[in-house]
View (cartoon, rainbow, N blue to C red):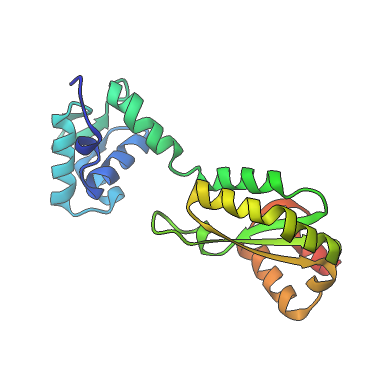
Length: 203
């Protein structure tokens, strides 16, 4: 087919899940394997496979008593529409890290992302929690005044999230409440730049 629209390729969540499974599969899969990996009921999986086969972007061949399905990777719609989507769908975190790490320079001793945004999938806008440790109180004031407002605008524009920064000085980090949060961030957060928080807390 020379014309295939997004409405046909991505017509339902189930069909998108089937496409994702086939795209990442390194070999042909049976209908039962597709169903299990996509987390769908058998009927929904088979309907999606049939629709994709009708579009000629999925091949179907008999293998013993079962049928095997495989994405036609040379098909133009796979190359131009499907591959770019699934190759880039998980790169939001990488782009956020690149943006934040590039802006948080100067007197930043450590910077971490933490909270629900690291584990959330697709969904409504939320918060992007940022934890930053600086050397002195004046560095904290400078960061909050000169860097964070513009960074918050960038995060909102590019990712649809609200930046929630928590900036502390090295002296404040020794306080029990902040230190407890820092240890939790070491365990669950993602370091953007600077030292390991655990080294600063124990130092």
